Length: 135
Length: 254
Image 1 (cartoon, rainbow over the protein chains, first blue to last red):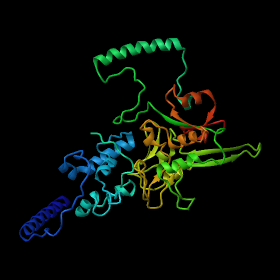
Image 2 (cartoon, rainbow over the protein chains, first blue to last red):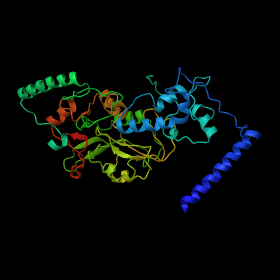
Image 3 (tube, one colour):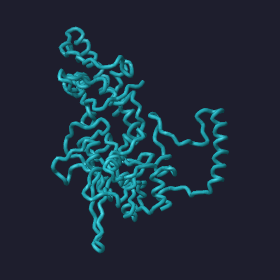
Image 4 (cartoon, each protein chain N blue to C red):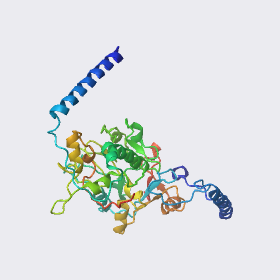
């Protein structure tokens, strides 16, 4: 009974989504939402291809955090500190801006996607130590 | 005492050396046949991508004769290392180490000792934690995984040493190596970020810098370690021994 209901609701939702997409295609419903302007980063390339990072960066970070906290594995490749090291920008006065400040690397996409970042209530959002880059 | 330190019984030197050579020979042969398989696990620094194991058990020895009353360099160094700043509320401000002054009323003998997380082998904070946030790492360091800490503070009530603090305020300016945040419990990590790099905890360095050398850090599982030699050579005690927690922090001349 419940399963049937869920399926019906799911089908209705699919139709609604399709309808909105059809609308947006013709009337440009989402056109007024500006794409995030991502600040430039240091380094030649990211630790993973950009498309993979956009979709899965949180998976890498969560996986790494458990390894680091519980097993003491401190590889640099997927470390949050490594992200901040490359993706933070400086003011004209040479001060680092937090990556979760408005318009900065993390926040600009998270504002666009309307996803709250929790990392920086505990973690430093500016590089405070030089992290050596290793593959 | 023997149970506490996990010290192997000292056996006669010659047979031990002979056994070692035999095993080493077999080990080398095996190494040649199958890389990665070792019969004799050699003492070595852990690589960055290797997990901690129970081959190490990190501990701290505090010499109460050398610890000076009125000196709180270990506390300041700890605060500096982890970015711990008070809010003028001593009852709730975070405190990973505190200096405790003791006096024997009978004899008038006075002591000043640092009290911190004792890194128990049987930690009560781990027993009571409802989420698994409070845990003991395989190398004996007791930590809080703040990602899964819900701030219930059961561990603070369970700890016989009042070693844990709760963060009441929103924080800014945290150190990269020491994430701290509102709504979680924290305590001495034995400077785990330093230990993982093969360095000494900040308090131990500070005590050495002051010329007191009251704190010795080391590996209780390594028979050749300075800490193990000291704990074997003279009597040491743990705080609240009746609780049978088998702490990794020990006090001597106390």
